[in-house]
Length: 128
Image 1: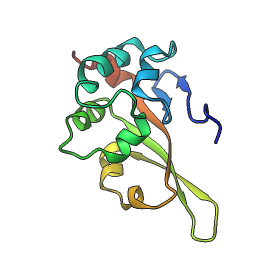
Image 2: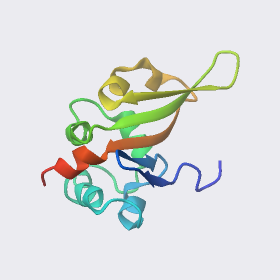
Image 3: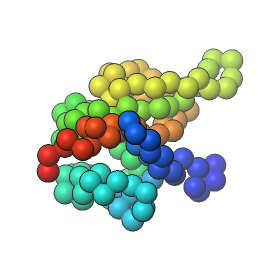
């Protein structure tokens, strides 16, 4: 993989898609990341998460007891990921964070998180 694969920020009216290979530290300096999400990272996520950790790696290890789970759940986060097919290749899937955390897909070897999707409406209504 190229160093910049899965490092992107795409926004439309409904949602913001963030590439899963961004570390929290890189997200703080990226200019396309919504300022409010950067503030949430700085004030609420970084006190309990490692700044060098990728957003995809963090969500791969997150549990419902993790304080960051409630933050991402409040942002109506979803995860787009790929799981390996038995005959070769990958199948793309998308799941809300609550379903992703309960999924057995997280334990599959070769599973790859592509992006994290947050709702712009939920981001706008998030109280700091």
